[in-house]
Length: 227
Image (cartoon, rainbow, N blue to C red; front, side, top):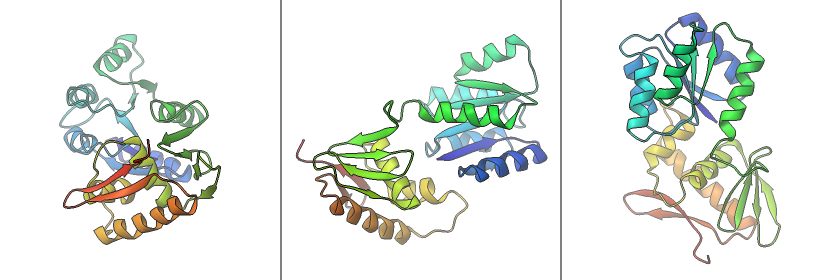
């Protein structure tokens, strides 16, 4: 799961980034509202953690603009203010939850888990498309027609998770590269093709009719022609 952290206090940003990475989240961190807005508009993030008091653009305005552009990524707002009015303002602007500083690490992680479960999975923590299901707890791919299953590598899992969550859309190599490897990673586009090949082999291994189709000049799409 990839998280966008927008926090201008350097020590806080570093501490939060370290905590999240220890929990196996992938984190991109930015220190001002305008840069954070541009990153959030990419649509590659699963959750956004957003400070209220930011240079260039405050958190309230940032989340408001994201919602105006129909970016529905769950947003957790962080604020040093505890007044009810500030909390209400954040929620009215489109935030999904908030935490008042200082906060306990356990509470932050619990709220992230809750946000991460929204709108992406069934109650039994799986994603499904066509004749496949993806278990979010143990990164296992299963063919629902024959019961065959296989464990996925981290990159294979993230590719299928992204494709299923965006089923019906064609995802470009650039979108996939940024989503899986991040903005600052120097991964080349052929890495996408290599891991696409690995992921296709896993689909074939379990006997799934669902396939990852390459759309010439555009990118990749998940299809299952038998349904």
